[in-house]
Image 1 (cartoon, rainbow, N blue to C red):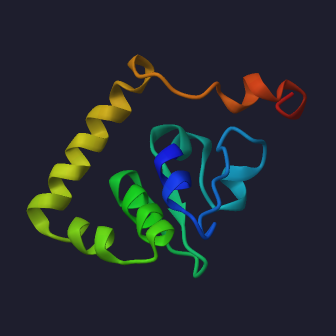
Image 2: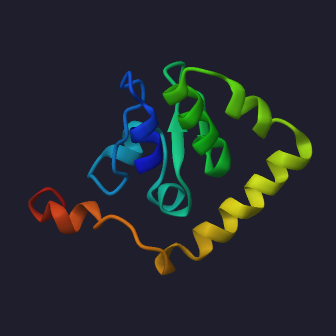
Length: 109
């Protein structure tokens, strides 16, 4: 999400940590779903997970549908899905932010 925040000069994307109590339920998602993948919830209620969510976040941040159109191309979309699945399976090996509940233990009790 750091890249999306950096590209989002007009602050179009709202990033919410899924670990924060009540967040998954507010989006109609389960804890299992949000632990498995990133999610994008559009204002009209449509939800996208994994590579689709990343493409939608980039599209909104950049103000262009280009990432979503590229993702919609069969070969590129499947490739992005595979890369996302690999990254998700190996996410513990990559550097990242401190988990939300470690940063805000009082909110996660």
